[in-house]
Length: 332
Image (cartoon, rainbow, N blue to C red; front, top):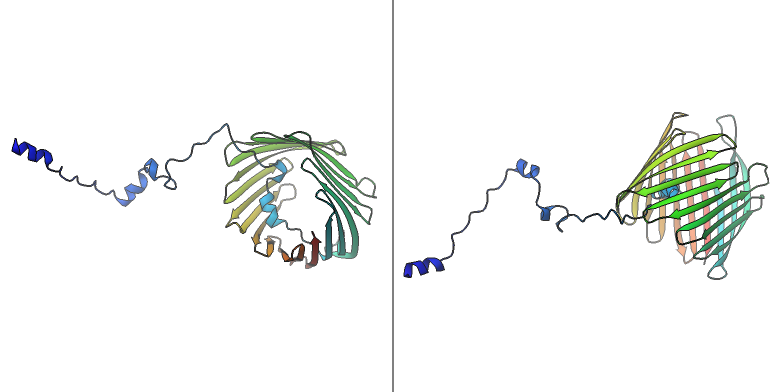
């Protein structure tokens, strides 16, 4: 009895730890569920019936365009905006610079150009009206009206004094739970439609089709977009012979890098562009460089509350074309 009681009270013998696996074998064998990922347990399950709504089809490359297509200008620009109330605002813009004249030779011909632009804006949660009138006779108008919570109407119009150069476009946008669709009607018997669908939390596919009755031309295109918190990748291909790829890497909340690749099968033209977008406390700097030897940059410096300084520069080393711009934006 005494011996059995002492054996029952004695602690169990220590268990030897399992032998360590070789380094090569440890990399091949799968990890445990709690060791995968970021150490927070098994990866989160995807609810395939609750996917996010994708971006509009025409905005597939919006992150890349912010860096690769800055609004560069040449000459002097002054913009002033006055808020009359919470919904209505007036704008005045003066531009003095030059514009390029089409020429059959390789030399670039520029002529002085200047204009004044008056604008009126009406902004409401369900209705947006934007109008611009220029001294050279052009008029631009934009309308966006939310007919329902999911259906919106957009109207774009540009009127000019030159015959057959005025344009108009009606767009009907429908926003679903995990998809978007759009139908377009324009002058010259233009009809178009596009659709984009989310197939996973980060991947979406879409397509478009158009018909121009005046020119008897039609086309079809397909696109894909993959986006995460740190990167955005897009790919587009069209029956017109255009292939486009873009990539955006978000280094931080203030710095992002972008690149794109364009191929035109009809003209056998290939080009690629690299750009950056750097947001500081008082300014924002965007720039690009492409394979054609064109380098451009745009600096937006906030001098004071409602006052922004613009500096624009673009240099084409191949064509020996140099563009520099200075601007000032004042608004409440």
